[in-house]
Structure formats: structure tokens, C-alpha cells
Length: 494
Image 1 (spheres, rainbow, N blue to C red):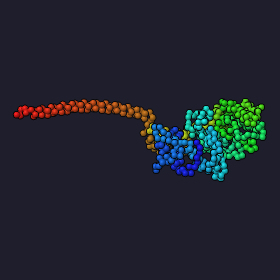
Image 2: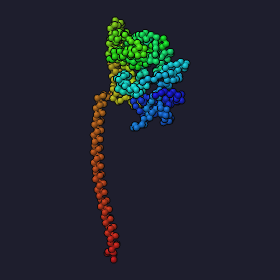
Image 3: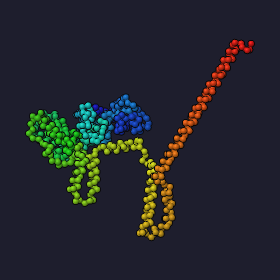
Image 4: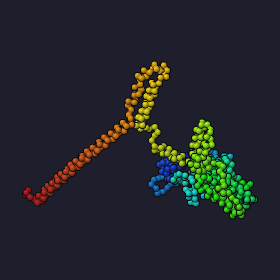
């Protein structure tokens, strides 16, 4: 789908409110019911059908036919508008230009900020027919079972932005990351640079080959493998300096297939130089010769770095610093928890968000408590007060003025613990509830039996009455017929 940003300035806040409601409903619905959109958008003044119709007319929402309820699906166009509006509010962009690139997973556009500085907007669009094997090719789901294409695109954008930040901070030749929202990533525009597959000649192919192999080795020493290191993801500046792009598929050197990915990256570079520049490589790096020097895969939560390996790393860290004072253990524990959260990724966050949303819509109020829980709470509170009173009486090191007031306090103690006499235990409550349920069940059975007997008696009486009425009616008809027969023939009246 091609981005058409001309409608952004004409949409009202109510339109974006409806789009946001559809986005929130998409967490639990493939097709969001119209009633749910109205509930989330909280449109009290009406006009929701008109807003939805306008959004559907411009392909920001799509109505799904042949379903059991009336609902709409959020399209990539509507998702684009939500992301662009947020990025505009953040000041990351103010205008959208031409499309400069397209791939199997994303579209690339030129954008500008308020100061008219050109930047690059990358919009992830997973789900195209040319690349649908996401589960086998990408590790976006982790422990999840399924998800929509919009959700996959958002995960891919967040992962790429995280890798780009880590690599840029550690001095790797990558674009400068600027902002990320939903499935969009904004980065700096690399000027005077061209994709490697568009370059036909270079001054020194051997030097460029060594530079690219050194970049692969440097990434591996930091704990990362690009996974798609080829001429389509490399740019070359006028000074023959390579710039690396496209990072969602990066994996850790601890991955089960790390050696295969490493060898594939090396082979892609060798094959390209042989075909394009007729350069035959005589040496290349081997995965077994890599000496790990960094932990960027841990910082970026790269695929393949397991929690067990993280625990072993922490154990090694503690062994090296076991002579430090014990006051620093709390800080180390906090850092471990933060790194565990990084390794786990977004699974727990998404689950908590969906749980909170379900509780907000259908769950009970937080202030409601059951009678048993309330009585138990009162019991525990009274017991604690009584224990405090007894402990205060048993203590011998009280001041003289408190010892003098002790008889008066003991005299008023029963009135202070008045709730204790009326409170019930959980066993009493359960027994009383059981007795009430038993009595109510017996009364229900008796009432049903009485009703059945009464209905049978009423039915029998009604049937007999109906028989009597039928016989009475037959006698009246016979008498009328007899009178008519006598009247017609003369009979005894002559």
C-alpha cells in the first residue's frame, strides 16, 4: 500500500479518536465490532456512523463482509495516519515527500522536520504476498502463538530501532536513529551515498572487501550477526565508506544457527564481489575464530541469547566481584531484574496491557470486597490491636504515667473491641451459607411439588367441566331439533 498523506490535515480529532478506538479493539478482535468502537471512542453526541463512513471511504478502515456482527478492520492506511500524527506532535517530521525505496518488508520515504532538514521514514509493512513466512524467518513472536500483521510490523520497527540505537552508540557505521512510533522509524538521511547494488566500479575492490569482512567480524565480536549482509543492505559513500542498514533480522552469536548465519553473510559478500567486480577472495573469516569482546546482543535483547546464558553471565560477574561490600547487592539485584525484563521482551508488557484493558471493561471495581474477606480483615485488625494491648501490658519498662492510666484503659478495652464480638470466622460463615443453601434447596423442591399437584388438580377439574359443558350443549341441540320436527309435521297440536 502506498502512503497518501494528503488527508492528514483534513481529519478532525474525532476521526483520530475513532481510529485509536479501532486500534485498541484490534488487540482482542480481528474485526472490531462497531459497538466496541463506539464504547472506546466515547462518542456521546452521536455522529459515529458518519465518522466511520468517512474513514472507510478513504481506506483508513475496512468493513468486513459475511460476518455475524457489524465490524471494521484497521488498515495499514489508518495505522500510518496514527503513527504520522504522533510523530508530527513529537516534532520528528512535518512533511512527507517522495518514495525512495521499497522492499519485501517496508517502504522508504523522504520526510522533513520543522527546520526543513531531510530525513528518512521507514514504514514496516509485513504481510505482503512476497514475504509471509514470518514465523520461520523472523523471531518476532518469541513465545506467542499468533498476531496480526500490524502487530508484527510494530514489533519489527521497535526491534530495528533498538538495534540501530545500540550500534550507533558503539560507533558502527549506521544511520542516526531519531524517532520510533508504532510501525514507523525515522532516521537520518545518509547524503552522498548509494546502495551497493547500484555501483558498477570501485577504485580498490580488495580494500572494500577487507573493510566489509572486518565489519562482519567486528559485529560478531560484539555478539551480533546481521543475518542479511548483502549488497541490498549496504550503502557506499563517495569516500568508499560502507554504511549498514536494515536490522530487524539480527541475531546473537549464541543463537543455535549463528554459524550458519555468519557463513551466509560472508558468502554473500564473496559472491557479489566475484560477479560484480571479478574479485576472487583468497581469505575470509571463520566463525570459530571469532573472539567475543562485547555484549550488544544482551543490551538489544537479540534473538538467541537465552535467559540461562544471562544467569551464567551474572554468576561470572558475581564471582569476579565477590569481595565487594554487601551494601551494593541491592543495586546488582535491580540491574539483574532490568536485564531480565530486556531479555523477556514485550511479551509480559503486552499481556499486562491486555489484562488491564479487560479489567477496565468487564472486571469488578477495585473497591468492592466480599463479606468473608471483610470480616477476616476486621478479625486480623482486632487481633493485632489486642496483641498490642497485651504486649503493652506485659512490658515492664513503661513510663510511670502510662502505668497509672492502665486500669482506666483496661476498663474501656471491651468497648474498643466491640467489633470482635460480632465478627464471624470463615468456618462459621461457610457453615451458615451451607445451611442456608440447603434450606433454600428444600423449600424450592417443596414449592415445585405443590405447584405440580395443584396444576394436575386444576387440569382434571377443567377437563371434567369441559365434558359437562359438551353434554349439556348436546341436550339443548336435541331438544331444539325435536321441537322443529313436531312443528313441521303438525303432531299433537292438531
